[in-house]
Length: 219
Image 1: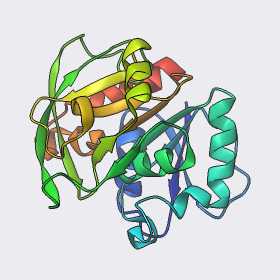
Image 2: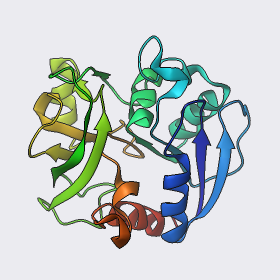
Image 3: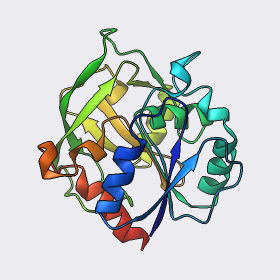
Image 4: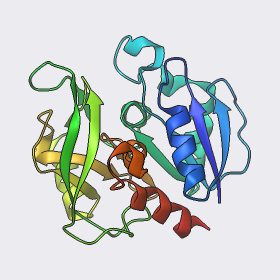
C-alpha cells in the first residue's frame, strides 16, 4: 500500500504520521504542497500543523496549494484521503467535506487526550474498531469546533457519515462530531490525532487500528 503525506509550510505532524504509517506497513512518500502532479497513491494524508500560520482561516490558504487541486481530483476518483486536525480544516476549505472548523467554544487552545465513541464502523477508516467502542486520542487545536448547516447535519446522520463522536466535547463541535466522512466515504476528516496514539511508547495505541486497518483495507 502506497501512501503520500503532503507537507505544507507550517505542517508539524507530517513526519509523525509518516512514521506511524510506515510502522503499520505502508510504503510512505513525502510530498510537497507545491507539487501539481502526484505519483500513483492508494492513500493521501493531509497532516496536522498550522499551514501558512493559520492566516485568514485555518487551512484556507493551503486549500489552494497546487497539490490540493490534484488531491480533490484524486478524491473524486475514489482515492482514500485522510485529513488530521489542520488537514481536516484544509479538507473543509477545499470542499472535500461539508461544514467548517471554527474557534473552540472556550476560545482557548486545547491540548489533551479526549475520549471518543466509534460511531460507525462502516468505512475504510473505522472497520478495525468495534461499533460503539470507546477510544482515547489526543487533540491539539484552537479551531476545532465543527459546525455545519442543519441540512448538512441531517445528511451526515442519515448517510452514516459521522464516524467519531466526542464523549467529553473539548471544543463545542455540533453533535459532538470528531470525525466524519466525505460523500464518497473514501475521505475522512478527524480532529484528534491517531498518529500520536499508535505506539506504546506514546502511552496509547488506540489510533493504530485506524491506520493499520486502513492500510489492510487498501492492500
